[in-house]
Length: 629
Image 1 (cartoon, rainbow, N blue to C red):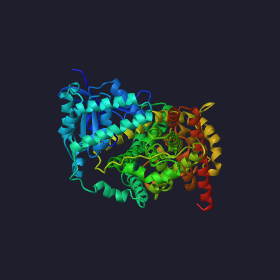
Image 2 (image 1 turned 45 degrees about the vertical axis):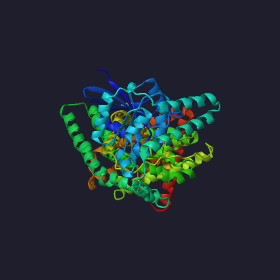
Image 3 (image 1 turned 180 degrees about the vertical axis):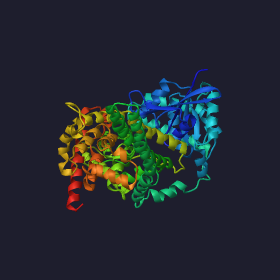
Image 4 (image 1 turned 90 degrees about the horizontal axis):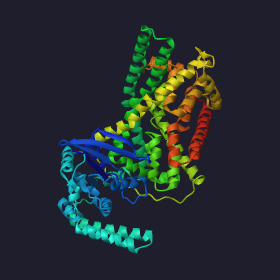
C-alpha cells in the first residue's frame, strides 16, 4: 500500500505546528525548501498499518504569492497534489481564518477543515456548528484540540479513511468561484480587481459565520484581554518585559543551567580528560598525538560542550514564553521603541530569534513587509547575543565577576539590544531612506504551552549547537592545536613561537587601547570570526583551562590566574563587549550574502560591525579607567 501524503496549512498561531508535532513526534526532518531559506518540516506517522507522510507548510494568511511563504504553499499544493490537505483553523478566530479557506477552494483544492482549539472557542462562549459548516462548503470538517491524544487519533483515523476526491464544492462555493472569475475577466485594473475579490470573500465569510456561529454567550471581556491590560499596557509593559528577560537569565545562569554546566564541566574537562590522558599514556601513544587528543580535541570541544546546559535552558525558556503567546506581545510592546529606530514592532521578531542563532534570525527578516525593514533587520541582527556568544559571556562572567555573573551576562544582552536599535536608526537615516512601514500583528490568546512542542523546539534549536561542536569546533580545535604547536621550523614546545602566536600578535596591536592586546586574545578574535564558540575552544587550548573546570573557589582562582596574564576585570569586560558586537560568524555572513544577493552587504556587515565593536569596547575600557575600575 502506498504512503499517504498529507499537507498541513493554515494561518500562523492556529496550533498547526502543535498538531504536526503530536502526529509525528521525533519522526520529523527539518531542512529548507529547494532554493528558499524557509523551513521545510516533513514528518512521518503510521496508523492502521498505513504509512503517512506529513508536511507542515509555512503559516500564511493568504496565498497571493507575495512572499516566499505564500509562494511555497500555493506551489506545493498545486504541483505536488497531496492526498489530503488539512486547513487548520483557530476556532476562536474562525472569521479571520476562513479567508485562506476560501482561497484554497477558489484554486479547486479539496480540503479537510480542522476546527482546532475548540477548547478555547468554548471558553470564549462560541458555539460552532461543524455539520452546518461542512454542508455550506461541501468539504469534511473535524473538531480538534491539538494537544489532545484523542484528537490526534481522530485525525489519523480520518486520514486513512477519507477519500478527498469524493468531496466537491457546494453550490454556494461554486457560485462564489464563478463570481471571482467574472471579476478577473471584467476588471483590467489589478488593484481594483483584488479589492473587489477581497470584498466578495468577506461578504461570503459574513454569510457563513451568521449561519454557523452562535455568539450569544460570548463574554464581553476575555481572559486574554484582562491579562493584556497589564502585560501589554504601554506604561508598565517594557519594565515587565525586562523583568521577564532577567528571570530567564537567572534561570539559565543561577538556578538551573549553570549548576548542570558545572557538573558537566567537571565530568568532561577534569575526569574524562584525566582518564583519556592516562589511557593514552599507558598504551604508548606518541606524545604529539596525546597532546592533540587531550590538549586539542578534548580541551577545545569539551570547553564548548560544557555550555550545552546553558544553551538548552535558554532555548527552553524562550520556547516556553513563545508557547504562552507572550512573545507576540513583545513585538507590540516594542513597536514605539522600534519606530524611533525607523522600524516597526514586527522588526523585533527577527531580533528575538537572534538570541538563539543569527542565521535563522537573518532568514526571518524575509517576513517583514518592506525591503528597507528587511535590510536593516539583517544588518543589525548580528549585534544580538546568540547562543554561540553565550559561552564566551558565561566563561568571562564566571571568572572575573563570580558574584554578579548573571547580571554581567544580562548587561551583554542589553548592550546588544541597544546597539541593534541604535544602528537601525543610523542605517535608517543614512543608508536606507524610505517611508514608514505599516504594522499589522495578530496577538494570539494566552494559553498554557504545549510542552511536547516546547521540548521539540528546544531540541531543534539546541542541536544546532551540538552539531557545531561536533563539526566546526572539532575542526577548529585541531587547527588551533596545530597552529599553537607548530611554526616554520616544525613542532615547537614554546607556544609563544607558534603560528598562532604570530597571527594573534599581529591582530592584538589593534586592541592596545582596549586593554586586551595579548597574542592569545588576538588569536581568539581571529577564530571567533569562523564561529563564536571557537573563542572558548581557543581559550581552552591556549590557557589549558579545561584542566581546572570544576566550579570551586580554588578552580576559579586557577582559571583567573590562567586568564590574568591577558585580562583584568575591566579589560575582560571590554573583551566581552567586543565579542558581543564584532563580525558575524562565517555562516551568518554567508546567509547575509544569500539573503541580500550581494557580496557588498556581506562585506559591509563584517566591516561595520567590527568597527562599531572596536569603538564601543574602546569607550568601555577608557571610561572604566577614568572611573577608577
